[in-house]
Length: 86
Image 1: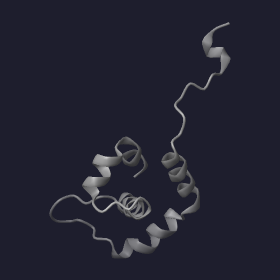
Image 2 (image 1 turned 135 degrees about the vertical axis):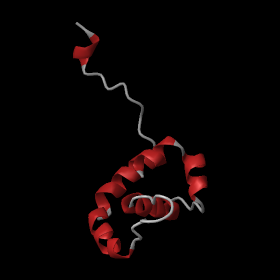
Image 3 (image 1 turned 90 degrees about the vertical axis):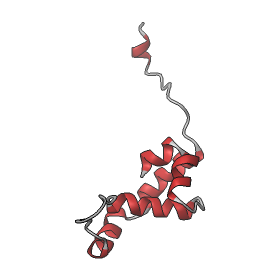
């Protein structure tokens, strides 16, 4: 019997934050919020390229949920999990 046929789930256990973010993906109506905010979000035709509206909205929600006060703090302190979710 080969290891591949055993159907073992050898992935790491999800952290509480990952479980919470997965739940928020199901609960928060992201598409409706983006549709509501899109007319007021800058298009970024001049200057630096802007972040997508969806990413900025998710980052704002994460800052509120995890009481983070700056984007740099978010990236440095929380690492890969937060970057992948946003």
